[in-house]
Length: 480
Image (cartoon, rainbow, N blue to C red; front, side, top):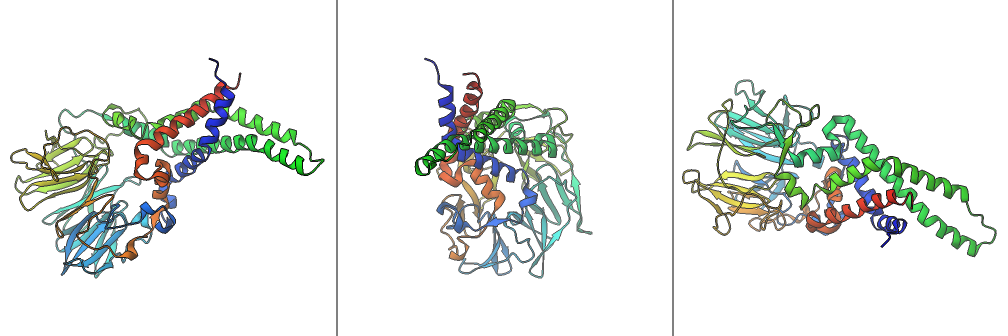
């Protein structure tokens, strides 16, 4: 049967045009986070599932004792409550006002001082005000954790550690040594992700991808004009006699659409296909495989831990440091020693840990969007926190049955990403705390802004196929 490529192109384009333009605009925003860091949107303008309820959505990542109360921290800053959780008040004085700068990864107490780590910087509490502390980190590095051992404060970046000197309170960057048998390969998922955004080739690569996004927007607009303009003119001619048909305009519009589409088919398909690969089910396969870093790209680093570090904790019973990475769990005798990988079956989401601390029984609680597990290092036993069952595998979907986003030993509760926790009442005024425009763009780009969490599994997979088919059918129709 002969395929009518013109018809295939027209209808796949009509179905996907809005979503394609949304992908392009949100993708440009995602590529320039620092430029839009100060822009935010009230959650009251977003679909209902973005309202904070019962401390869900990462609003409560953890808690720390403070004087007679408790500090609660998470994606929208820091809050102070009493020991019973009866009254909650804002405790963000000194932090940047923008929501994107208040994503608190952790709070640590060192030498009687409180330090908060956001994804973008470190702050020390001084007389109730958070003051910024300079870090010698790379411009593009994000912070992922903070922890303390006695008078040693350690900030965990995605690629390096930053250790504070107790005397001067200044930080020194520490490069972790390579582990035995560790190869120089990188995650295939990370490679495709950076290729899709252009980050693989630095600023130039991001600008090229931005340009491709603009091309796709032009193709969408010219295609829409070609479809709608004749219908609009037909209605005008029926109503007003003597209306001339702008034949030249229509011809020029179609020529522009065809020429741009033909000469850019390779790069437009590349962007669409790589984006399609970044969501399940293809995402899981990519996350489980590695490849050599492409020479000369952003992934070609001398640092074996480039973009691999997640969380760090000191185990007093074993007198050693535990390091969680995208490569698994490692142990270090000290921060300058060579790390050794631990053979432990602990399911962790590809998005990394959200909980990593000891409970009252001395077991480690390890929580992520793949669930929560108890880990006894002495016996090696790993059990599901909720069911007590032994996990079957360490690999799985990015979201499990219990997507754990936080834990509080002060209120003895696990915080689930969607349902939160009822252990402490969340004030209603916090329901519509702002979301950064960067995060709004991320939600739109993933489809969750339109469909909720189910979009993680189906939206990009289905829409990506339609857009790819639209581009391919347009290419095929050039000669049919």
